[in-house]
Amino acid sequence: MKISSTGGGLGAEVQNIDLRDLNEAAFGAIHQAWLDHLVLLFRGQQLTDSALIAFSRRFGELDLAPVQETGRRFVEGVPELYVVSNVLKDGEPIGSLGAGEAVWHTDMSYLPRPPKASMLYALEIPPVGGDTEFINMYAIYDALPDPLKRRLAGLRIKHDGTYNSGGYIRQGVTPTDDPRESPGAYHPLVCTHPETGRQMLYLGRRRNAYIEGLDVAASEALLDALWAYAERSEFTWRNRWRVGDLVLWDNRCTMHRRDAFDPASRRIMHRTQIKGSAMPAA
Ligand code: OGA
Ligand code: MN
Image (cartoon, rainbow, N blue to C red; front, side, top):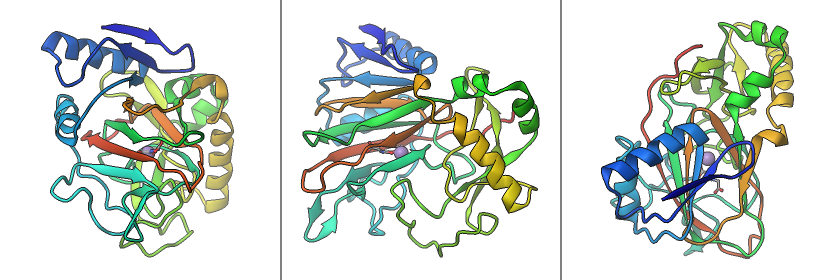
C-alpha cells in the first residue's frame, strides 16, 4: 500500500490496495491516513453494494441514508445506501442531487449527531463535469484573523434541514426561509475534532444557517464574513472521477461541493455514511 498526498489543500491517494481484502494492519494504516489527510481516494476498486457496506462498517456502525428526493429509500432492502444520480427510471430519478451544482456542505449536519465519515463510490461517470471538490476546515479556522476567532468563541450555529445541497426540499419539511424557524440542529461554530483534538470551523452549509442569539441581520453578516474565508482555493482539492473510484472523507473537518454536468449524460454514485457523535465545542 502506498499513500501519497494530493499536493492540494487536503487529501491523499491510496494505491496498491483492494478494499475487499484488508487485514487489520492495512485497515489501521487507512484509518490513520484518513485522520491525517481528511480525504482519501482509492482508484480502480470493484465494489458490490455489500462490499461497499462491509468496508464502511470497519469504521463503525452506519447511519441510514437520508430519504431520497422522491420520498423513497433506495436501494430496496439496503437502507444504508444513498444513491446520488441524475438517471431516470420510469420517469423517476433513481437517486438524488440531479445534474446541477451541489453547493458547499457537509453531510447530514442538520442532525444532532452527524456522520463522522461518508464514502462515495463511482459506478457511472459523465465524460466532463461532475467533479467533487473538498475543503479543509482545520486550515480555514487557522487562517481566520484573531479578532474574528475571538468573536466565535462559545457561539452555536444552526445547520438547516430544509434543503439538500442540490437545493431540493427534504421530504416532509414545510419550507421556510426564516432561519430561526426552519428545522435543523445547533452545533458549536468552532469544534474540537473528537479524534485528532484539532480545532475547526463547522459551517455545514450557508442557506438558512443561523447563529444562535443574534438577530437575523447580525447572524447573516457574521456568516457572510466567515464564508468569505471558507471558499479559499488554497485549502481545496478536487476529484475528477473515474469509474471505480472510492472517495472517503472526514465529514467533520471538511466540506464538499459538486460541479454541474450535462443532464443528458449519466452519473451514478453509491454513498454510505458512518455514525458520529455530537460535535464537541472547542
Ligand atoms: C454526497 C455528495 C456529491 C457528488 O454524496 O454527499 O455531496 O459528487 N455528492 O455526487
Ligand atoms: Mn454531500
